[in-house]
Length: 105
Image 1 (spheres, rainbow, N blue to C red):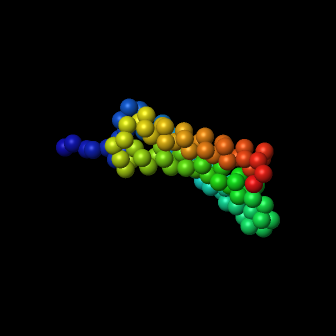
Image 2 (image 1 turned 60 degrees about the vertical axis):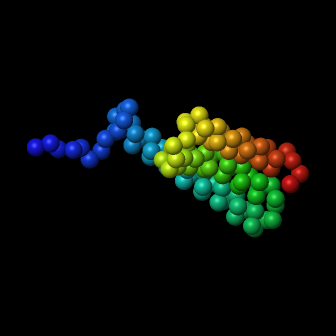
Image 3 (image 1 turned 120 degrees about the vertical axis):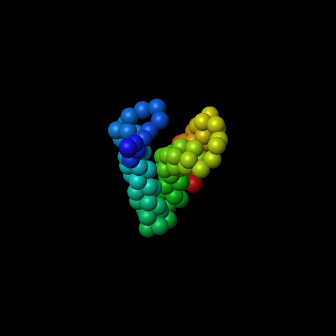
């Protein structure tokens, strides 16, 4: 009788895979919570800088995390393309945060 394991991974141990997944999930949830707090601050104060901060945090952390998870899962794009898309989001997020701090939103 051949028993198939419930959890298999390619290229590493299941513990490492689970740890990375949990870490990425926590980073995504934390980024979403921080962005939501900044957006609620914008709603209360109508300060455009807080809106740009919320957008920047979302682009810097939440969007690349989802990009690195969803694009390889749902498409057959090469890993370099996934990295370019994710890094572009991070750069856009940093620019939005810089604009919220030093710009005149």
